[in-house]
Amino acid sequence: MKDTAKHQGLRNQLVSVLEQKGITDKNVLAAIKKIPRHLFLNSSFEDYAYQDKAFPIGAGQTISQPYTVAYQSQLLEVEKDHKVLEIGTGSGYQTAVLCTMGAKVYSVERQNELFKTTSLLLPKLGIRPKHLSFGDGYKGLPNFAPFDSIIVTAGAPMIPKPLMAQLKIGGRLVIPVGGENEAQIMTLLIRKSETQFEKHELGNFRFVPLLENKN
Ligand code: SAH
Image: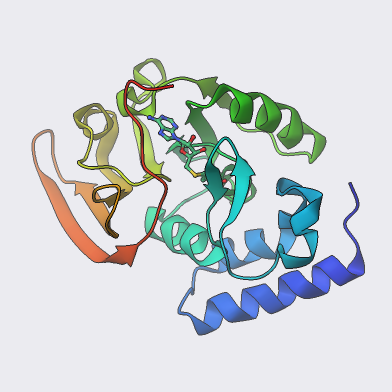
C-alpha cells in the first residue's frame, strides 16, 4: 500500500479537473487532494485511479466517479463534527472524503463482502468513521438519528421515508432518484420543519441501483 509523489501529482491534476467542472468547496477539494484513491481500487486499476471515472469494486458495484463524489459532498455543506449518514459504503472512498472533511460518518452497506473489506481497509489508511454497519440502507440508522445530512450513493426509485424522518430540521438529504435503466436525477431535500421539505432537482447522473430486500 504505497502512496508516492507520482500519485500526489495525479491527484493534484484530478483536483484541477474537478475545479474546471465547477466544484468550489475548498474542504471537498482538499479531501480529494489528500485521499489515495488508488488504494480503494483493485491494483489492476491503479494506473487509472485518478481519471474522473467510476470503476468496478467487486460484488457488481462501482466506486463513484470523483466528480460525483465531489458534487454530492459539496451539496451536503459539511461542517466540522456534523453527523453524516451515508447509504452505500462500497469501497469506502466517499466515506473517507467525508471523514477527512471533518464529519462524523455513519455508513451502511448491504453487500457483506464489501462491508468486510472496507471495514478492514479504512483503519489501515487512518480513516475512522464513527460507525460502519452491514444492513439495508432503506431503513437508515434510527438508533443514531437525527443526522445533519444524509448521502445516498446508489440510485433509488423513490426517496425512502425513514431517511427523511432521520434528518435534523435544517438538514440536507442528497439522493439520486430514478429507476435502474434510466439516468437518476440528483435530488437535494432540505428539511424546513417537522413536516416540510424543500426539494431541488439538479441534473442527471448514473448510479448502480439501491437495492431493497435483496441479497
Ligand atoms: N460510496 C461508494 C459507492 C458505491 S456504489 C464508493 O465511493 O465506493 C453504491 C453502493 O451502495 C454499493 O456498494 C451497493 O452495494 C450499496 N447498496 C445498494 N443498495 C443498498 C442498500 N439498500 N443499503 C445499503 N447499501 C446499498
